[in-house]
Image (cartoon, rainbow, N blue to C red; front, side, top):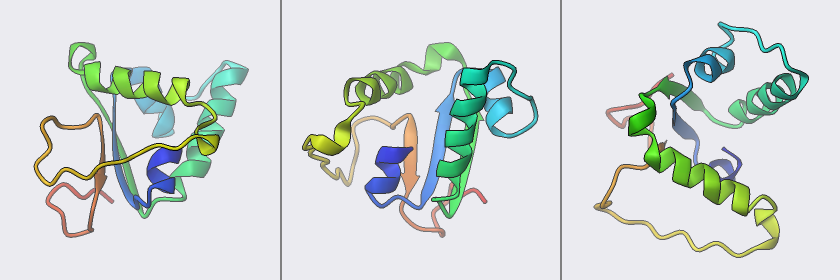
Length: 111
């Protein structure tokens, strides 16, 4: 979410394979562990930086792309001190696990 925001995304659609985490992010379920409460507080703060944000639960077997992105994010924990090249592909070869919607008129915009 931080990387999407810093890249200029204002509409974000995130896919998660954990129904529990999706419900916690949506505020339907309450987190019990202190570490999860802190994590959700960070997410809530980041959500305010987007004009539109939606989280969707998907089956674990369909979440390989998100797993790759989370490993990348973990590896680049302090990414602000590194240079990351982002290439725009007008016809992407694969759908990303996190989709930054380019305009509010896009077909899949969520509010």
